[in-house]
Image (cartoon, rainbow, N blue to C red; front, side, top):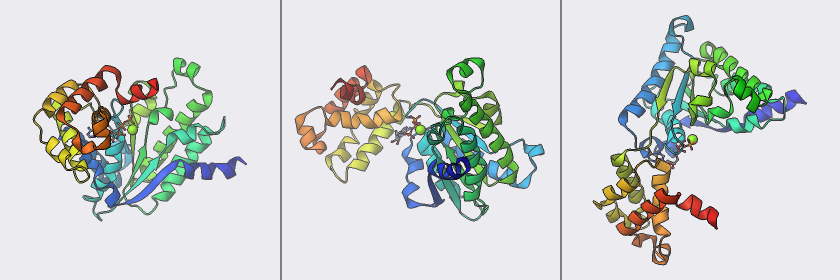
Length: 306
Ligand SMILES: Nc1ncnc2c1ncn2[C@@H]1O[C@H](COP(=O)(O)OP(=O)(O)OP(=O)(O)O)[C@@H](O)[C@H]1O
Ligand SMILES: [Mg+2]
């Protein structure tokens, strides 16, 4: 029963396997507005990791093939990790790369006592089998905190023992894969580095913080979002050039990229006219929306108030 279920569970936990370059993934990297150093560090860390582990023994490099993207929710971590594989394909020797997207939540909802074997099946057997042709492969472990929680006493009280055994399985798989599959690089994302297991963190080769956008970043996100809507609503192309977008950005100070993008919807739902014709959205609508979004969370809270 157990051995029959586990492989299918591993397959179900893999959201997607994509060969790069893939046009569907081409825009992801550029869609995230963030200091160039963040993207440079992520791409360099991944490319160098693959190369060093291929050419040198583990005893020399101590590399586990594990990069951690951490930062507040909605800052573009998952999008960057998905776009990374596409960028990697531009610089690998054969101009090839692969993306394997893992959804750890699926695993951790496994029946009690099954998580550990499910993690082992997935990370030590199924994922390596998807990449046994040697193609450089980025494995996205999204929201890793569900899978590699700290095994401190406080955490033991809050989490079932099964979750802690799953953490052991993650560590064992990372240790086994690092030399057996030097073409695999795991990119984990997390909002809460504080809850991650110390031994897991110790295996991270490079940590990269993804911050909320600064004022110039917010303007750039609004501009590019409005421009991408212009083919449907021409006037939004003009709105994208409005100098008062800086004022909108000022009101959105501290907001994450997801919330910045959603401010445009919030602006459109401010008046009946803009609902009927989203292209008639004005800078005043955006300014008012930015204030609403920062006062009460805008769309999300408005929705729950019913
Ligand atoms: N810096 C940014 N520039 C442009 N768009 C952004 C930025 N940050 C987030 N977004 C947008 O917000 C949405 C959410 O991004 P994503 O899911 O990658 O964030 P995340 O950091 O993984 O969030 P979470 O921690 O909640 O999983 C996407 O539509 C993305 O394009
Ligand atoms: Mg995410």
